[in-house]
Image 1 (cartoon, rainbow, N blue to C red):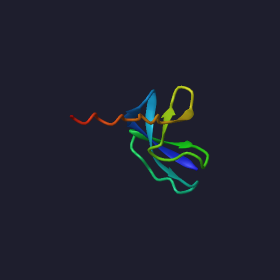
Image 2: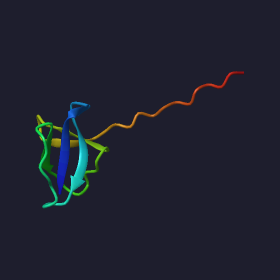
Image 3: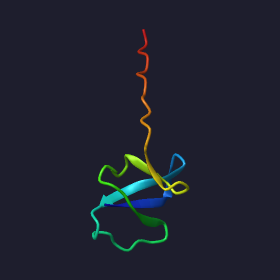
Image 4: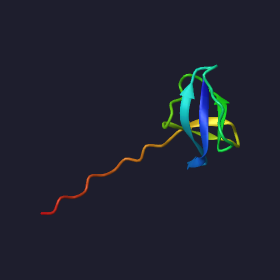
Length: 71
């Protein structure tokens, strides 16, 4: 698998995983993007890529608390 990393979309301490495709299905990209090998557990928009340590990380889910209803 190959992950398309968007270097113009920061996430946490790295960049957004914009797309994941099978080997051989990559396409030419501008310098704002790059392809990185990954395993099949990586999902676009659920992971970010840390260029410094070359690791994929889950994007944290921020839970929202319901707003109090007026009394």
